[in-house]
Amino acid sequence: MKKLITILLFLLTITSYGQKLITITINGVEQTVEFTPPKSEIVGTNCEAETVIFRMLNEYRKSQDKSIIQHSKCAYETAYHHAYYLGLDGVEYSHDETVDVPGFDEIITKSERIEKYCGSGFGVECIASINLNYNSFVVTTINLEEACKRVVDLWVASPSHKEGLLYDLDLGSVSVVMKDNGIGLVVLVLVSREN
Image 1 (cartoon, rainbow, N blue to C red):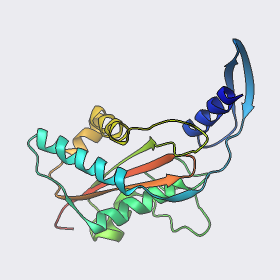
Image 2 (image 1 turned 180 degrees about the vertical axis):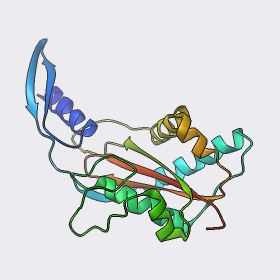
Image 3 (image 1 turned 30 degrees about the vertical axis):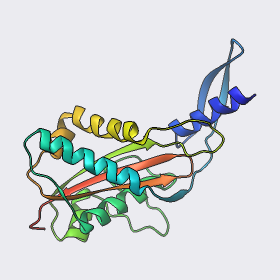
Image 4 (image 1 turned 90 degrees about the vertical axis):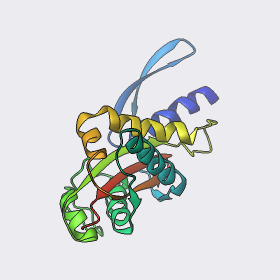
């Protein structure tokens, strides 16, 4: 029973929306079951993950002979706005905020968000999700450094994200908005000091 609960809770952490048919194996017998993940609530931010990802970004930029990014309040506000939106139930995982969520001020594009918070529309935005699985029912030790490194490695492996990480920009920030299912929605925003 403990194994089944662990499997089901693990599956909860890898999907956020919609009904799915999943196949699980219990005692050597495969079973297909209908699975609807419960809605999850935003529980706050993860400052430690934000700090680690930001440090790793600067380490990567330094290894590529690029300048270090300085932390920026306007970039953080921009990143937090979109990370919070991504954490809301029923929205699409996208750079655009196209789903109308009651009580939330959607700002459709990253350029519009950067314009609102930083004064100019030019900048870079990278998004990802991170599984920090704080669910107390699953006994799993998540290595924060490894989880954050996976996020940065995914961005570096994507040619368009890698290009954005290496633009000649000098300000930025990372926001990690946590949901109660252990998933963190990560948004990195880089902007120019001239904003």
